[in-house]
Image (cartoon, rainbow, N blue to C red; front, side, top):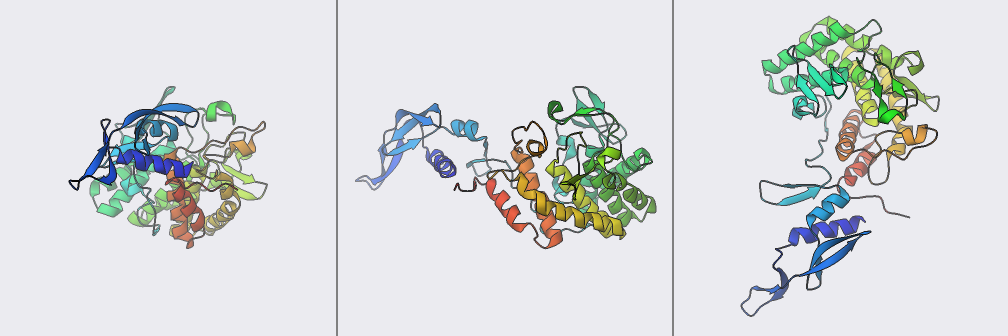
Amino acid sequence: MVPLLRKFIVLVAALCSLGGCVSTSASTSGEPAAVPATQAPIGLFRATVPGLRAGEELYLPLRALRERFGLDVSTGPDGVVRAGYVADDTPLVKRHDPRGPWLHFAQVDVTTWRRISIGPDGIPLSTYDFGTFQYPVEVAQYGMENYSKWVTTGQESYRAKAETVARWLLEHQDDAGGWPVPFAYSYREGLAGELRAGWYSGMAQGIGAAFLAKMRARTGETRYGDAALRALRPLRTEVARGGVLRRFEDRFDWFEEYPTPTPTHVLNGHLFALIGVHDVGELTGDAAAKDMFRRGLATLDRMLPLYDLSSRTSYDLLHYTRTPATAPNPARWSYHSLHVTQLSALNAITGGRYRAIEQRWLGYLDGKALPGN
């Protein structure tokens, strides 16, 4: 399929017009001779699409490829039409500094995300069909965005926004160290069970903890560092006791973004939490956080291969953990791209522990699926 896809894209890029195409044979004037194009229906897997035949070449409309392969098609400033799985290049982290910008967040704009608006208190509001809420996951990401832009640009406007989020996190952190999610949630229409309002998200805990640790290092305010360490408590507390920690195969620590009754093991949420735990350990010197990070790496050694679907990654592992089993849940290409960015950050931290996986998954974005046997 992959070589065929590449050939199709090359052919479409070479398409001149519906009126005719140019062959490689020269005319007596030295100019390429025009080869008339005729309509030719083409079988694309089990569908028939309108195409063109010009000499020995066949041409397909780009629309057919976009619909069949889920391509993002855009025209660049140079006038070249480009087709790929994602519109932008995947950000890769070459160096990770716990005090610096976080991953690619200096280029993130949370306010443009679907469902997001900024409330009068400067905190993101997430609007769903069942209500509008201050969702700790997106609040923490908004804080991390503004921290990253502050340390990158030095602009005080970003500092002010980051401090607004930091104060919100201090005010809304409960006695267990968590930021309760104020709404009930049904993951994948209830396939993993229901979450009642008040649940914690491992993703919010990890990003929020790292953000506060960064704010402590940048501003010197000890209350931020204290709150960062408290935020790790739900990450050390098992789901059955109200936390977000699960032990895969009874031995590998996993931070659940959604601590549903049936384990979901959402990959991007765990990776965000794990990188956050690393930064807390480095910025505070906390031995428990450093041990959590080491255990988390051992978990990835075991579990990362389970997410590899040979041409893209899985968003979760519900197809592995649920009985009866479900079909795999392939990550949207934007999430697959995020997985690659997160792995690049872990490779920057560990000296390339997952470099081969990062490169393989990056190749999937270029259509380089693994060959069959």
